[in-house]
Image (tube, rainbow, N blue to C red):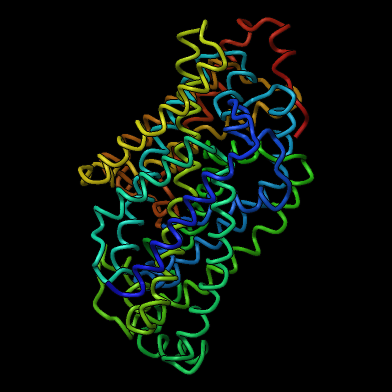
Length: 494
């Protein structure tokens, strides 16, 4: 047993301790458990947002794309930075509305805005379907990170089970408070470790960051540019836009926003969080450095670029620190996703069909659903195969289909009806599912188009169809909505 394993296990125990201890002195009703009693200041909101935005995909995927894709990898920095520009203007209004109406889930927002519990059910189903592959992604990333960083002493299967048991325990006990305190140590570790390895490794192997890029440029002159076709400029721009819109719609992001103590805390968070994104550059540096030092990684193995180079470069104890940081990038977002999914199913699905259920029963059910959803995600992690890959590709485009209904609901005089919002979501989701399952692209559907249009993200098509049906159905059904309901559904001007 080497030092790396002791370090990883030590930080895992610390995360469990902090996660469970976070409950101390708090009466864990549904509002306290899911949104922290809406009392989190700028720091905790920042940690939760960073914890959700910077996951195992960022830790492994950013270095992997830098290693295997080159220039197109920068879309990750593009969308995460622009996301918080929209966040600054978008979420204070949502927070204000949520506080006034005591909302605790994303689906509550749709139910309240459109005066339709069944629209809330639809939003809940779309949200949970999107979140399950996202949780699976965290579990698979956790298994890879811990197994590699422990030099194979812990298998991916064992690592996943340990992580699931840990996160399920503290989510059931402490809710969002446990996520927030775990995020504290996660973000401190990520900041220190990523900054260090992102600077040290290029200097260690190349004598600096500029010489590293010069060597890459000399070997493959086009590697750091966007290609003319495929991952081209139009793909880059459309993918950044789609990920920005989809990123705003994740149910666990809504919940984290509800936990803020004020709209000012949300705006401060939107200002400072993009600074966190700068750290991604250092992860990219490691991925670029690995091109020459650990060549030959292809396909899924390219996800191992950062870890393989770290093992080759550092002593076991420090590799353990890297593994612990990666472990926490799975636990924090995983905990928020589990909590959002369980709250949504209990309050916005079960409550609709069992109106007599009390708040205490709903809160107890939300906690009870955490291990159930965890086990479902573990099953897909081990048995999903290609179906999970397909579902994962659909997830971001799925969740983006909620965006038009949210945006229109924030206007002062919304023309969108509950029927229109439902129709847009359903048609958008069906379009995404069809195009993903059949592996259709704009190019295969319209082969005569120029490449600048064929390379557009397929989610753009689904979103346009969503808006078209939403508007048409709303125009046809607007007279079915009473003036009172129209007045009630109006909100603060965006």
